Length: 66
Ligand SMILES: [Zn+2]
Image (tube, rainbow, N blue to C red; front, side, top):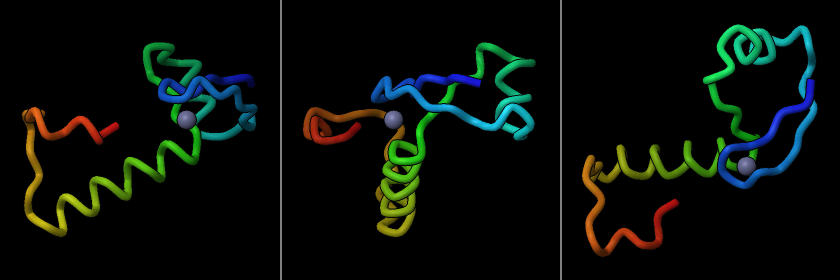
């Protein structure tokens, strides 16, 4: 099925039989994220957890964040 990344709006084709495709079909509200964006966010999350500076609220200095 064709899917669109919510972050960079890149169009992707995923396997109809994949777990992700089934999830998206059952719950259209569930958003798709392409591999690159997924990895970028995973990296940031990991970095944050590693430094122990995870913030829930965005501050004015966080303009460089996704
Ligand atoms: Zn993306």
